[in-house]
Amino acid sequence: MSIFKDITECGGSQTPNSETKFYVSLWYIPGGCDYNNARVVKGYFAEEEKANEFANKYIAPPEMAMVCHYVAATDVNVNDSN
Image 1 (cartoon, rainbow, N blue to C red):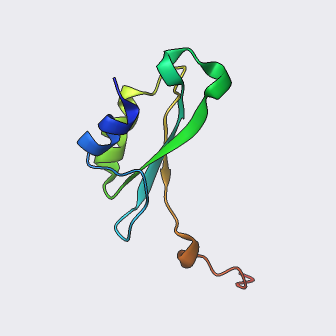
Image 2: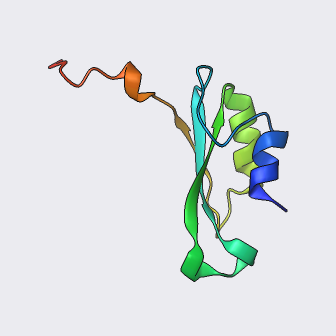
């Protein structure tokens, strides 16, 4: 089981691109037990179905995957008062 390989196999990437609409955030725990070196990993997906497919593999603890809508920094107008 490799989180990084599974991201790719489900049609995602480890970095966002112009097609990214969703991301999956989850815990990566090296070796499945090295909690001292655990970190958050995100997989980026163009299709919600693919994001859900990936997340469902890691939805249970300890990874606890969660699908979110992706908003690129360039999509946000920080000066917009609305």
